[in-house]
Image (cartoon, rainbow over all chains, first blue to last red; front, side, top):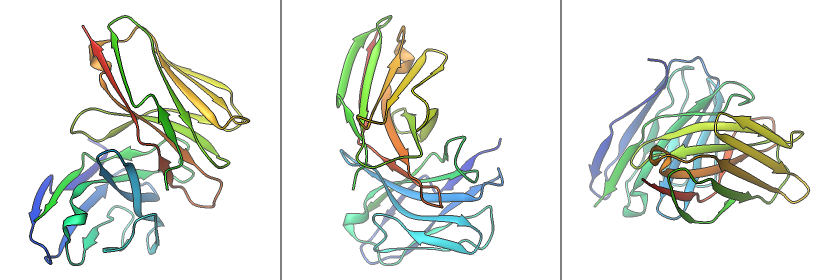
Length: 113
Length: 112
């Protein structure tokens, strides 16, 4: 089925560990973005990409890295995990201009201990 | 910073009743979108309204947009228990790239 696939669904990390959250879409969407969702905070933009090879920072980029080598994939790297990064992470994609709205993945629930 | 603010934060109604949620935002927008999130799931796009539109319908959903007041409302008519979810408004600006800025959401509970 077409859509946005995120892996893993759940992850527990120790403080200081690094990991990569995977995101892949098969809709040939140009725009991809990462959000984190914390209780009472809504969704906040971490990083986004408007096409392969082009990325930029969102509202809360510190502690995260991204790259976009292909149209399909947009991984999010946690460089040195901190308890403040405990959150639910969502990847989303849209066609250029976003006129049709965004398609979201099912999320990765990350706990940093 | 949050662009949109939904009101109320929580809403509890009976099946068959209408549910109205409001969203206010701060800066000029290209469009405003509404999303639904069921507990523990991802967000699902419901409807998009452009800045030059005032009202839009989709099934049981009706969205209005008042750019002079920087506000929008989402009306769900004849609510069902399956409509129980959190609802978020999100705005898209006029910059050359496409990102969304979300509000904190309204939690809707529809009781049978």
